[in-house]
Image (cartoon, rainbow, N blue to C red; front, side, top):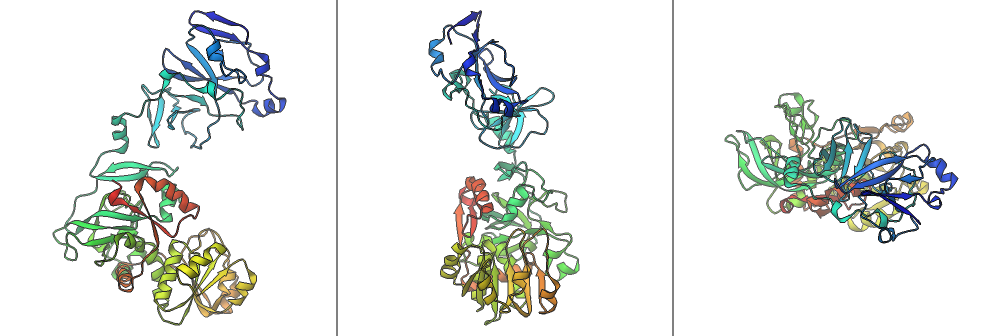
Length: 525
């Protein structure tokens, strides 16, 4: 850099050939992607993006080029130029491609911005985009080179002090969080990222119970619906269906609950109450049952779950938690506990001396082991990970531990189990496990693999059955809670605060939890 031409308030610098002699292989990779540069206009305090051709570059630019080899260029240059340019680097974080824009921007405070087709700039706050008025944006082309190419120094990327990004206005934050009588955390889009949110719960009706939520368990269903894995999520979405709390108000016709009672709410909050299943206390199989969150209630409203400060439900779907049973331990019983308890009771696996196999040792699996030991069963844990052995045998008291990939260990178990509970998520083979059942044995499937492949001989020649099950009816749920309280059965949990939920959900996906996350709602809002 030997010369610099000053023209009015705009500095011109001739391009040094040595700084743009890019390796041909890199040049080939980048073509025909436009090379983005960020242009800072001091007059508007605003960053703009311009595309420069990958192959042909002009020799003179109406701004200063900061080369990689000259980190102290600012000090050496003369005059007060109003425009400065720095190379835009690829973002290191991932974000969803905007649906209505060709360009997206990164803000220096971690937010994002985009340019709509109608020319309006939008800034993201708490996961959603809003029109930007005075925000200072750092635009870069949406399409980027496939790998970072360090043509310019990191020091030269620093914006002038006057371009500091202002924090979101309180009014914008309030608009994004909404308004209402209930504080919560909600997902706004399929990214699944949760953030603060407000909405209105319904007023207490004559047969309703309102409870202050103190704790809420974290289930994999929370991941599935916040990330729209099932393609039916309705946003904003407040997850959570393992709810424990304290009654704060009851309707005029409520007789089974009073203010101050410890209660829980499970995976559904309504049903038709008139069909055969509802009459048999099997509301979980009612064709019109309403999920605790992401369901459509009879009044047309979308239900919102337990990642919130309170909830109002019909008394039929509210369950008493005995005095002395910790509320944080009670929360996982409302989904994980009842999901394994129901098939065990249906298939008479509460008889001492029988043998139980448990596939998978997560939130559901560890509860199956606890129930099995409480019923006096001989429990065998079947896992893919040797690291689970100490937890299964040492912590939970399982009688046996088998690695499913070890043919010798699996062979030793053939025709030895009365009942198998399959809690493994994802696709997996079924024939190896069915062969472990005795004649007339039953394997209960609690997960949702994409397909089930079974050789008929494994069923027919052994008189075996493959059964399915999901959660439980209201009668079974209350019975299960009372059984846990009487026999001192407590889930193993990891307590977290609400602001840790995004990390917790990712850890749940990565199977990095022992064995159930529970959110301390009472101390998080």
